[in-house]
Length: 582
Image (cartoon, rainbow, N blue to C red; front, side, top):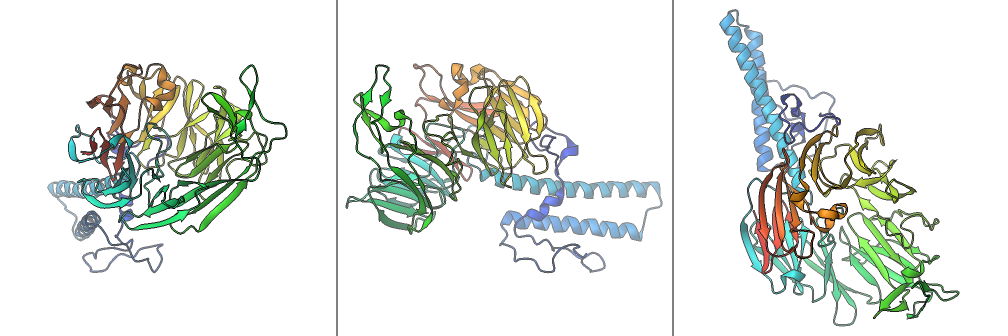
């Protein structure tokens, strides 16, 4: 097993023969029993020590798993027969000993090669399960298929297990991501919102897991709202919900509702002083907020909580209609992502995990996301756990982050966590944080959680584009793309700031870089043509993770349009419709 402080032996630019993964991972291939063995020359199968007497029935193996299992059995049989032959007769001559040594070395090479092959297959499978995993980026992709849409710019692409869902024109089409073939079409009505989906035109943390099932909410003819639930096979369930409640599609077939109850909910004019600051009416009491998550298909409640009205910031209770300030107690803003639900309004704010766990302290009005605190943000981590803003101050003047680990522990950082936009699906046992002008790696292992592993003193990382194959690819404050070794923090390569052309936007790279995709060897970035107003179009830029060289580039005339990866196949919205790239 590779040590955490060493970079990935199979990563880019690391041809170290001593760091190949051992072949004990062969036992992880689905469909291969842990007790599988082959008889030796004496016909007896070796005993499996330390294993239970009965094993659960294995899943049906795929063709790759069967082939690998067969190779493993053949290699094991060859090794045992070779060992038996050695016991029966050890060559006495020098030539015989040389031939024996050569044969033994060949067996060792076969065993190691089989282990590396299995590890590669496992890595590939884990990579394709991530939001940015792509089958291959070695060559410039070309159009493989296309479909036309009446209004493509308003369409949305959503990942489902094995299905590309295209939402637009009052319907959802389920496409085969490899061929573009339509598997099913479901009418959801004009104005329907389907999801969950990451913020369009914005990269960074927020990529969501495949929708299974896909939930859509739209108006119905009876003045209510209609909820449509679509599974990956196109099977549909529908039901109606109250039109007076805000409902939002959530992950795992959930539906989040926000309902204001009690208090003063009537819009009315508000007094503004000479400095433009609004003043709430004396004795004003706004409504409470009920947050509820239910099963979208059945309506069965999963959890609910009432967020009571508290001391509000006046700005959060005011909206402007034609520049006229109006008291608007019902204004709400929310963010529903994979594992986090955040909501803010007039005197109400809260953050929850998907299971209903409250993330902020409801008894502390200053605890983020306290009303109006724009810097407050909660985010799920790709390896499990989640990030919350702390209460202290970092060098940048904003609250430091606290990493909550899957095992229940937590790590209080000195700065802000860098959540990877793309990863290879493997946990390196660390998180990266930005502390002033430094980038720091902290352990997330249970034994030494929070320990500093290394510090890059002259790397002010503003975004972590990718964490893959033992390499972290970041954008620094000058707009350069830099790669560092995840095990040591040592520089691997640097890409000139002119390549991305972020200019002064390096601290908000997500406004000009619209995602990150990788096949483990190459990093694909959809990048705006430039930061100035005159620049138009989009560049698809492929960077070699081994040395930072640009492998290929595609220039497109249109500005950003949505690009997603489904089962490793890329699809993009164009001016005409949707195309598959490969």
